[in-house]
Amino acid sequence: MSWFPDRRAGTPEGPSISAETLLRPAAIVGLFAIALIHFLDLVGTIKDHVYIGVLYMLLIVACLTAASALLGRRPRRAWMLTAAVAAGPFLAYVVSRSVGLPGAPENIGNWTEPLGLAALFVEFLVMAISLRALAPDLSEVREAAWNPPGLTDRVPERAGRF
Image (cartoon, rainbow, N blue to C red; front, top):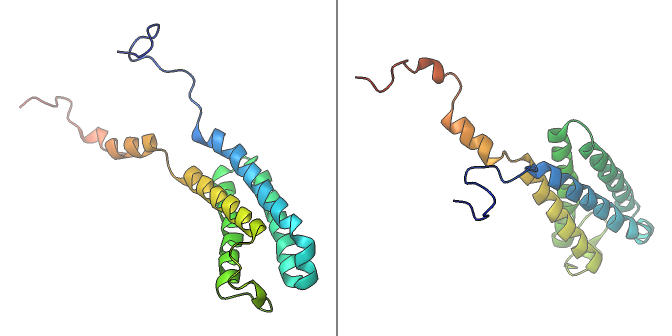
């Protein structure tokens, strides 16, 4: 029985949209947000610690590269790159606030910096989106579990007859 009176039971609900089709734009926007956040903090950071500023510039380039890779034809590699690009600054923030980076001990314990918290939030979302895109769909897993390759050729033609 269908919840809709004009639709018969067992008929498809309509055109299905793959999860990746919805996740790609969200990840691209997230990568642009990561690049923008670090661009806004670049001037002040490069004055205090040049090597951290250079790492920010490399991160901005990596974000733009990952975003363009998501538009390409190798989605699995693009999703892995996207996850890595988001995980890098996330881990660097945790390290810089816990044990500190070389030559930058003033950031230790500074967990509540607004721009840093915004970056953490966006980086976490991009990592979660990337991991969801890399995870196989449940339909693929179910299909592989119930129809292992090579099993159908071993089934006798008269299955069920004793």
